[in-house]
Length: 264
Ligand code: HEC
Image 1 (cartoon, rainbow, N blue to C red):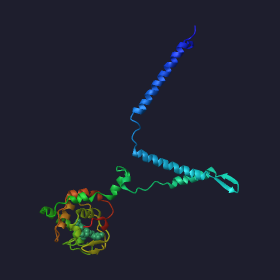
Image 2 (tube, rainbow, N blue to C red):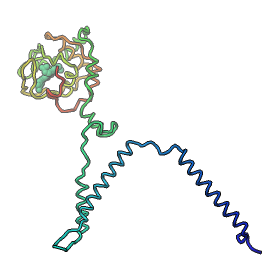
Image 3 (cartoon, rainbow, N blue to C red):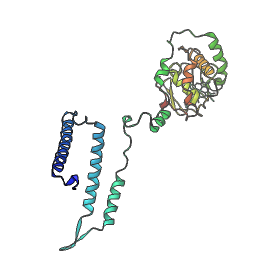
Image 4 (cartoon, protein in one colour):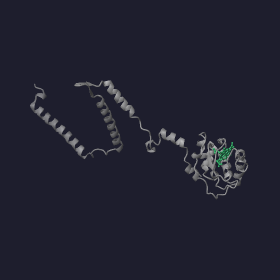
């Protein structure tokens, strides 16, 4: 008895079956290729990354080619540059290709550590804090003025009983800083103030800086500042404890200078 594989009829049928299945797959694959929607849209980020990879690879190739060159040591005698010299050169080339410094904020990942460090250094945005200041003609609660007057005992020693200034502190009476943006005043209380300062058209150079008075509560700072803004002939809107609270993160930072403040 012969086996089925010896039977020419069965072998003939198997051949055509196989060819048929193969062709069917080929047709399906071609159909998928044509009707399958084509290649995916080009991703600009992937494209930029590919460009960068290509540039880097080209640089390395160029460096390798230049350094694997053959050198003519004497007329007619050509030697190959030793491989270690080439690797040295390629290594130096890569080292020289240092990570670029961040130049624009758009290069910083908004949730990254660099962004966080930058934000901490810059402190809160003064705009929204100053925007909370009520209109200039807002009536001031007399109780708040009284509380502020008590708090002013501390300031008196340097700024004078009537805010006229003294040997140590500049005047608060008529100072454009006192009636200016409240964020300045709050930050001076929380961080202190140092260095020359323009006050009432004069350059004032302090004999000693004003140390931070951040031990005061939000209410106390709001009260004493509201008091100085509405005493000695000054007239300005009250300071809100909420505004002080929003600037508490300033505590512990280096003393301010005039340049750190918003020009009144
Ligand atoms: C130990 C002395 C001293 C005390 C106490 C003191 N200050 Fe000052 N203050 C100064 C000095 C000095 C400057 C100027 C610092 C500079 O220009 O670098 C100044 C500046 C200021 C300024 C800005 C400049 C101006 O004259 O407008 C304000 C506002 C201010 N102080 C408010 C206060 C308030 C409010 C208190 C009390 C809660 C107070 N200071 C307590 C010494 C003091």
